Length: 403
Image 1: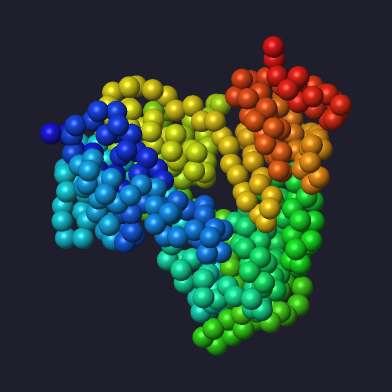
Image 2 (image 1 turned 90 degrees about the vertical axis):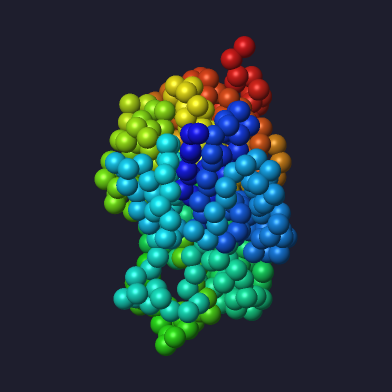
């Protein structure tokens, strides 16, 4: 009987095993997760869950009973320590398990502050898994002073939650502006004003020199010499693909585990999906860190394990929730040379449209779901409206769609 072993019980791993069973796969399936809880949603961790608006059981992607009912052997609190490609086995704890197909859905790891600048002090947190947020929660209380390191979406979402909980929040971003790596100045301006309106102090062009304290963090010295008193630090300086297992097995690595269009690695019996995998895209290679990509790529790999021979065609989209603003992003803005800002129908709503020449690449929509949906449809159809038409609020958005 064919045996599919999936390493990584996150969004990609859970989606893949469910797709296999729902598509009629009758072989053995083993899903291996390092955490002690069943697969769960990560985006609400630092928002609804930390705020106390979502219980643990509502985080779970599927009830734990789902796995037994679908004859999926769910191994929790278990780490795979090695892959023997010649023998087609993985080693987990003291067990050696054979596989016919192996899927690496190992996700990504948060970048941490080095110990040399105080990164290992108590009170310094990253936001990646349930244990991180459970450890942080007792410290995120009204009146405390929080330092957020990093002005990307992870840092901004953490700042929003801390501010909503009544903390005194300072965010530092080493680049000239928040969101510099991922968004246009207009989007940065929107979110800077949003956070400042909620009492967050944003310091741009200033980095962290070191954290202060003996045992527990008590302060921070910034690169401009400023010293701040702080009670906790949340680090949001990006993530790196989790490739150690693949590297040790000798698989090809290229900004993640390198896979072909159908999801296979350099070993035809091993596949990869989700945050850890880089794949072909428009003549180049990309890696997407998003829930939609984890689901869609994993389901494509599941179909290909069953012989579909189907290329994965990504349709990038992302979201971020901050205060009462939902940011929805369609497409990828890399290589843009022009932006157009369009006001939305409601106060505080707007969209930023990214063009390269006359080609529409991406849309950032802030509390503007109509702009997001129409932009997404245009991008996926390969259609580009005239930038002047996008900018004119008198021209209905719907008229931008091809007849």
